Length: 121
Ligand code: 5GP
Ligand code: ZN
Image 1 (cartoon, helix red, strand yellow):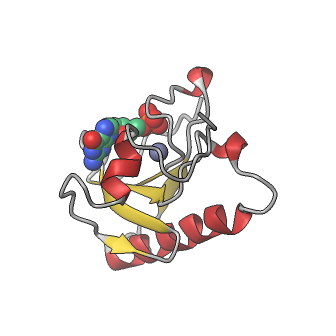
Image 2 (image 1 turned 90 degrees about the horizontal axis):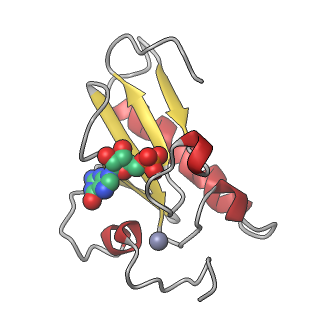
Image 3 (image 1 turned 90 degrees about the vertical axis):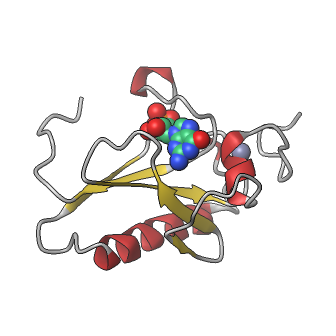
């Protein structure tokens, strides 16, 4: 199977993005959906997830960067809607085992709503 097959049937985030698991979306855009992380690590912890399957950031092809740009744009919209502009927020993606990626479908974490841990590494 191609890693970026647009119809990946057994990927959990593909299934969520297709609406198959009944997950509530806090926001949507043309190319991405946003929903609450199952195990929040901050008062506000959302996941921004492309509708299309990419295994990770490195798997985004040269024709598809608009999807990642759309994800970052959606992250800022959600940050605004959830009142994070005053205090600030963090957007991160984990790519690969050293970064601790556990779900092999590209996603950006949006974290905020309180003082976040200072370390990034
Ligand atoms: P990673 O470790 O790959 O960067 O992040 C995966 C994130 O997905 C984790 O924070 C985890 O809590 C979240 N997660 C895993 N499975 C589900 C799920 O089925 N639903 C939701 N809403 N979040 C999930
Ligand atoms: Zn997927």
